[in-house]
Image 1 (cartoon, rainbow, N blue to C red):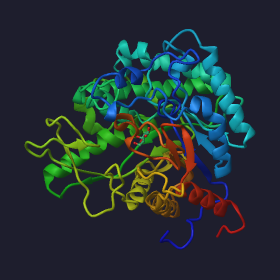
Image 2: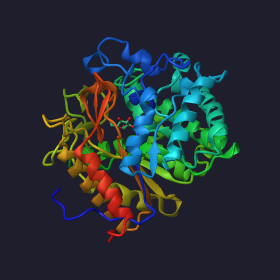
Image 3: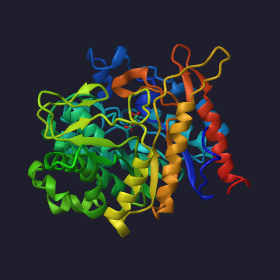
Length: 460
Ligand code: BGC
């Protein structure tokens, strides 16, 4: 560590770790689970690096007691996991699978016994296959089905789960799943994917209402956001960056926090009834931000398609994502720009003022692909550096008046990194995928010390 001491946070600041069902659970055919959009997508040749699938993943479905033990030892206050919708409703609607609920009963009770607050997400991209085949999130009906599912899960767990997240990152599912064909369901609709964004937001609003109706409280969403930088001061670059900013950030935050879509997007959106916007802006108790790095955006470059994680985007898009030079990079080739997190959070406060509820960072982390050395230790100093610098940046935003209540590191475990398969390692705990052996990395012990320092008498 090159910084003198840990960043210091308020004593009631929530320290957590995040995961998601399809990325860690495995056991895709056990316990009555129905197939999801991701089971179908990974089976299509060429979709996932090395032909990897989530069939076994971290085998968390069987090894969850060990993972709870690792979290207890780590000292986290809270654990953000996600429910697999098709474990609970195998067809995405109708009959409830009691075995599916029973798995999460065991997990939730185990967490509570360990003194860890379950802080789950209802939906982290693994749409039940039957719903996907009926149009998925392009179909408005999926939002209604999601509300039914929220009612089932909320009704079952409201007395034991004190913090809820409706949906994870509608932007990524819309852009990479329906827009660019990089994630399930693998459609490349470009701007025609935007109805999926609206239906995800509608699902979020209906989900908030359904959760509240069954007594759940402290409800938020986990949205992905990136500070957006124009590639230059030229008018074309400014315009392209502004459009991207609206599509990647504000289309997802504005309707929730202000009840309207950004005006600049009107030409791209179908007419939206006010009644939908009223549902989407149903008050939430907190706002979750997942953030990894900023985006540098310019006008489209002739003949050159923009790349996202090595995948080419449609060359006809009215913007292009550019390389951010001059910063260290993670092994996923993402730039490490901690000050962009401060800028993002301060920008949120400036944009929404009093309308901005307290913020939690629901994801932040880095792919650092190192394994155990000969002595068995995993020396992932660059993850420590990434996290340390981002926590300092987060603290700077708090010092500037942004109300941030907690930080959930992505991720507890190395896991199935979507289109990149197992090639990218985001965990504080290393997974040997041949044996499912868990090895806490140097970053795990660093995070443990950081939490201790922030809870204990040493706190400055
Ligand atoms: C997602 C996670 C993912 C992480 C790293 C977020 O977009 O919510 O599922 O693993 O970023 O790519």
